[in-house]
Length: 95
Figure (spheres, rainbow, N blue to C red):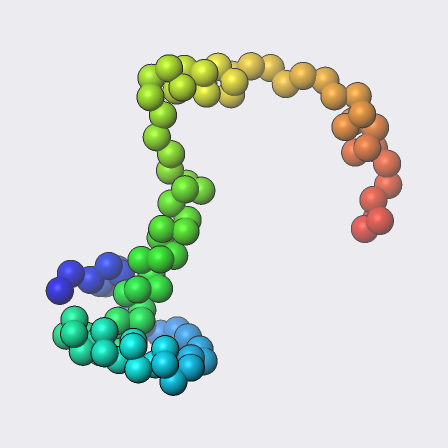
C-alpha cells in the first residue's frame, strides 16, 4: 500500500477524536481491508482529504487565454476606490 503522508516525519503529535459506534466499525473494517492499522488508515485518509481541501486554494489551472487575462489583471495598476479609502481611514472598533 502506498502511503500518502510524509515518510520521514516522526509522529510526535497526538490527534484525538470521537466517533459513533457505526463510524468506528466501518473505519475498522476499512483498515482491515486495506491491511492498515486504524491509526494509519485514519491518518492517511485525513491527510489526503486535507490536501484535497487545500489544493484549490493553492493550485489552479488556466488555459493560455485565461492565463493572459489573469496576468494582465495582476499587472494592472490598482484603481483608486474613494469609498474604500474613506472606510479604511475611519477608526476601527478594534482601535
